Amino acid sequence: MTRNHPQPSRRSVLGGAAVAALAVATGAGQASAASVASAARAATWPTEFPLPDAFLPEGIAIGRKPYAYMGSRANGAVYRTDLRTGEGKILYPGGTGQVSVGLKLDDDGLLYIAGNTGVARIVDSRTGEQVTTYQLTVPTGHFINDVTLLGARAWFTDSRDAVLYGVPRGRDGAVRALPLTGDWVQTPDVNNANGIVGTPDGKALIVVKSSPGELYNVNLKTGYATKITLVGADTVVNGDGLYRIGRTLYVVQNRLNLISVFDLDAKVTTATLRRTITDPRFDVPTTVARFGDRLYLVNARFTTPQTPETTFNAVAVSL
Image 1 (spheres, rainbow, N blue to C red):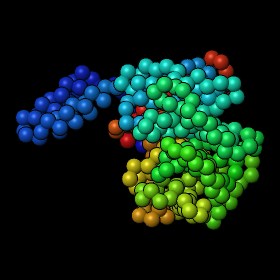
Image 2 (image 1 turned 60 degrees about the vertical axis):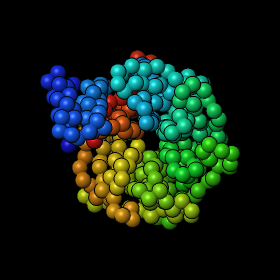
Image 3 (image 1 turned 90 degrees about the vertical axis):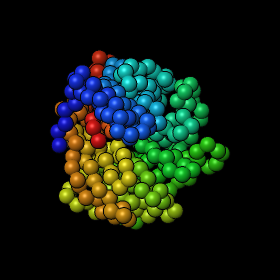
Image 4 (image 1 turned 180 degrees about the horizontal axis):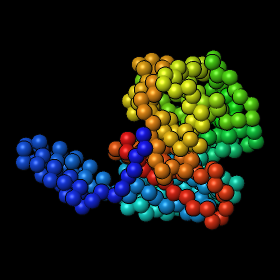
């Protein structure tokens, strides 16, 4: 499904306000009217967001407030954008040899960052200060790629090894290494485990294997990975960022410039393709975050020469 996202006309904004007024007049209540008015305002927010030249973005995270945090492969910097205005600035400057790919933001304002070279980094989203760093594995031969928050741990994928890493959240504790077993077969010399999210019941993890393009349900206690049967799609090749709303799973397929939307069954053993989302502004989108009724993605532009003058951006599409 191709979706274009022009800025709404003045009539559409006024129409939203009229709906809000009608809600009050008909006794829908102040809360309902405020919700409609808020949705009307959000519809006027920009749907494209510039990033610094040569930023090399890959990860994006959004919390309860309308701010997006995007990570850089160039030097590990984090850029914060106000979704209401499209304006942004560098929050965390990064440093030589640092990389920031997958990001997640918790309710306490802490950013959990997958740092590629064996590293997980935690940054305060309010101050930009680095809180702590975990060396999950040796720097070479590994690719700490993405992260999700589930219970007391932040779980990180390693695209070059069949292991997930659980970092303790908000308290002291040891990193837990969870080897992937069961149906999981590691493919050499390509990216394997990539995007990761929790299951609807919060008892397991869903992991996408970029090559050859498979989804897995991973038992948190044992690491046993059960391959999820795909219905309506042969693969999710180039699967990158994942996002889940209830039993709806969004899979970003980066070089295909699309998002595949799947319905999960109750036990997360089957994923049925419902539709796909594409947009002419997609230029190898990698990871995805949500605010309101929009999905926000960064364009990594992997197929474009990465020079100091290369431009980058993030875009928003409707759910």
